[in-house]
Image 1: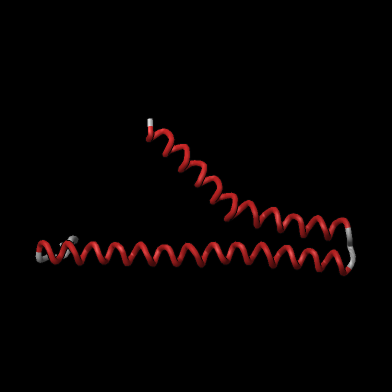
Image 2 (image 1 turned 90 degrees about the vertical axis):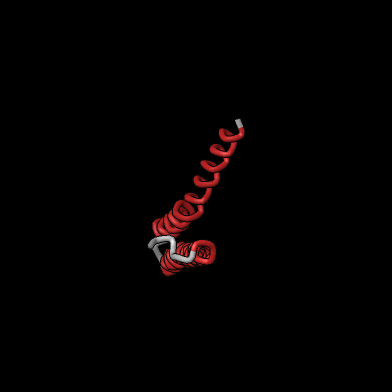
Length: 94
């Protein structure tokens, strides 16, 4: 039964992550578009620009975070290969 709870927690975490990565920027962008529709003046245009800027910032922060995490994973794999080399005298892929 603990595996069911872990699976449920993983799904909830994955859904939350998708919402923060993609849904939140989309909602903010759409809010900027709505501001422009309801206020077709310079103020509405500034609202649209703000929505685009904030949505782009959130997307960029998520990309930079993912790049950083992948670097950590690569370092962990390299460290595991070095430990294997120390124990067996050859690289794991040979």
